[in-house]
Length: 264
Ligand code: CA
Image (cartoon, rainbow, N blue to C red; front, side, top):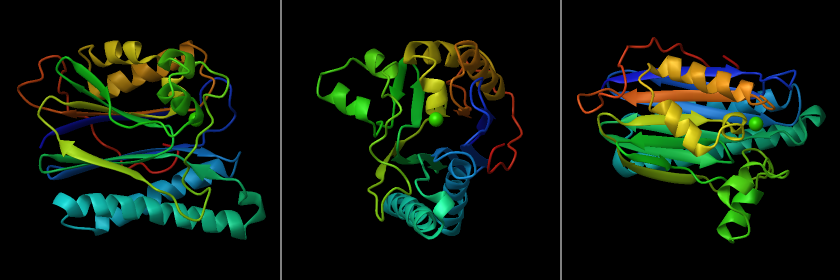
């Protein structure tokens, strides 16, 4: 398994602090990638997203080997653990009341991926001609889309587009969405906070991901374009490329993967 990774986070052009957190770690056997988008205001949102990253990486790193059905269980348990720990702090510390975070987690091992997801950060996969959103937003506007009341494009620019219906830390327990599947050489994964996906529609994101650039250059391009279109929120992106002969569209320049937790 040869993973090439780019990652970046940016405060954007309107906010004074960055409440997003991210994590990326890859070696020949496995890869773990997380985007978490905190909420609750300065000194709370960034605490929630950093706690989620820390707990999830810890729990998943401990579970070894993480294979087959176990990986799904481990993923669900890690997200629940993050939820209960963050929720406890919102109860115990007055200034942390109302804090919470999204969490979108991608774990790669052998030829399998496992995704754990809560909230409206997203994981996409580019595979050949297909560009697929692998997570489903837990949001008010997504429910409206499901009910046929909004189109995805109306949802993207809706005034309530940032209202989420599931959140890490908001309640004593939470139901994580866990999915898995096979990945292949040539696959390109994108994890992103809504500061990216609110500024760029899926078509534009796909266009950018199809440009022949290294993952770090792709991340830089995504972030700069989100800023050029307003940068109204913190912008975070992680691009993971499974290098292989079937991926001529992407230059496989190896990218050093910093061990980033927190605001990067
Ligand atoms: Ca956000």
